[in-house]
Image 1: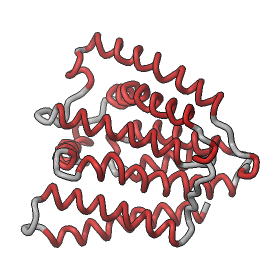
Image 2 (image 1 turned 45 degrees about the vertical axis):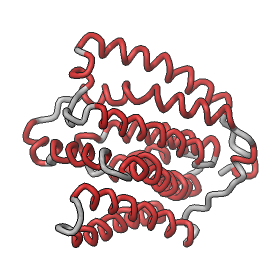
Image 3 (image 1 turned 90 degrees about the horizontal axis):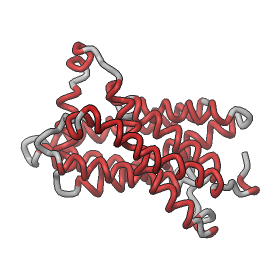
Length: 261
């Protein structure tokens, strides 16, 4: 448990230090570009640090098993889970005082601006998911599963909780928590971050594309997009994609016997 918390704190520390350093560039570069650079550099530093110190040890063993069907269904599951997860998050009514306290509107506008900035797509949709999977599944969850192997789901839940907390936005806590549970399950079954990385890439890519398409409405909701009745149709249609994908993943994902915890 101590190792997992140490990895979590190091992850947050790297982000804090680099964001603070990037703040020194204010006035020299565009504000959104500074934020994109900060996220990109922190992701690169995190990946390098965790690999060099062997806190996460990615290998090519899993990809050598040619898990193409698993990867395909991982991508399909990512598409199917987005609307139901966001719907649950939007269903919760947060007090206005909380929204103002955590500056949710400013945060959404910042993310929208970053995604529309040159390099924003690569950093947010590709680089950041790779760093997060390396840390939260490849290091934190791996450490937790070694600590309490008989309590797999509790360890998956703990790693998902840390993953949600790392997003630093209480108003958007539910979506990363649910995604973290799915990603943790995928890692526990395969002992590889590769299916989770692909899932994460697709999830963030959809978020980037949606943000760019609706750049004039940075705080839009599903109800704003489709109306109160069509939202339920969209959720139901997404579940028809998600549930079969999860079932196929359940059948396809196998943990190599040499990597059982």
